[in-house]
Length: 182
Image (tube, rainbow, N blue to C red):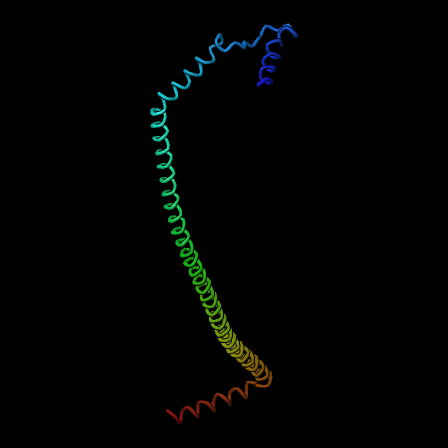
């Protein structure tokens, strides 16, 4: 207690040592400290029920908000788990679609290759037929040219070798042969 009084006296003498105008009044009755304490205690007693009911209401609101938050958390967790299930199902469906697409692409690729091979085979057959036809036509043209050349050569040789006398005999001979048929 003596130390408290010493502290108060140091504070009271503080302005005389440093020439400041702030001072501490050590007289409790004059400073109305008791009145202020009584006022505070009275306010606490009177406002106890009012503040208590406000605090209880506030506590109930906080608890209700916590319960609502917990309920929303449960709902959010259930929606999350449902969404995760849907995601897993969707991923399975996507994987199946990708697998089917790859299978279809492989079938289409094989079909295109088979069709291409069939087309190449048709082209080869058509080319062979065209070559065979061209070969036959060329052979016929060669035969015609050979025949034509042979006839020209024979004609030229006959023209060189046949005299007008021989021509007359051939004509008479042919007429005689025709006469037997008439």
